[in-house]
Length: 261
Picture 1 (cartoon, one colour):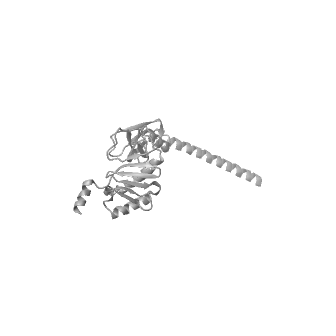
Picture 2 (cartoon, helix red, strand yellow):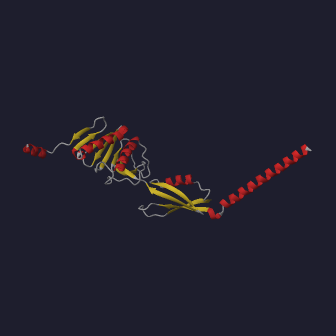
Picture 3 (cartoon, rainbow, N blue to C red):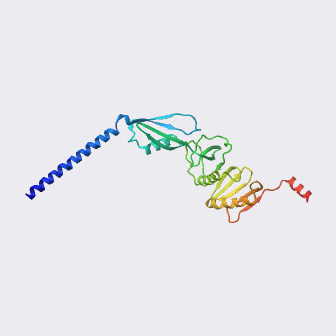
């Protein structure tokens, strides 16, 4: 008797297990059918640009159309980044039942690089964003990088240790709103040294490995001597004690000073 009951119990358990599997498969099939319903098929991706960007309407077809639930957003982001190398993909949203919207943003222009007699604006992440020109753009500091070679093509990535040193410095300038109201004309990189030429004619010399300390020294100096960045020929901040070289006085000013004395 015990053996018969055990056999019946095992049979009922097997039947119940098989029924559960069948229900699970059926439910999975219904779910797949629902998710693949034509109402959810995405046939194109809309691209939205930020305010102020050139007016444009971009739509890209998906081939073949894909369920909104099955679209690989990561792969799509990579694809859009390749289509628009001078912009960034802010995000791609699913909007039910069947819309995909990619939101783009313009890259932030840091300055301009130069090579082979041409100049090209570069973003803060090292991407050339507009075609090169024979003359520099007004208002953009020029980055003089010793290892940069041409040609300067739109979408090219500037993978250079010298660039990242200069970009760190210019990012600090952008965050702090400039250097006591003075604009930067160019930044030259030589080894670990950064030479910042201001439009006033003063040159600031920083150590790339001790940039934060150099900024602190400069802020202290300008606080004690407000006219420093107009009067000095250079301010060398690469050492423990800053070295200041004053601009030579014009000859007529020297003569006037002698007469007054």
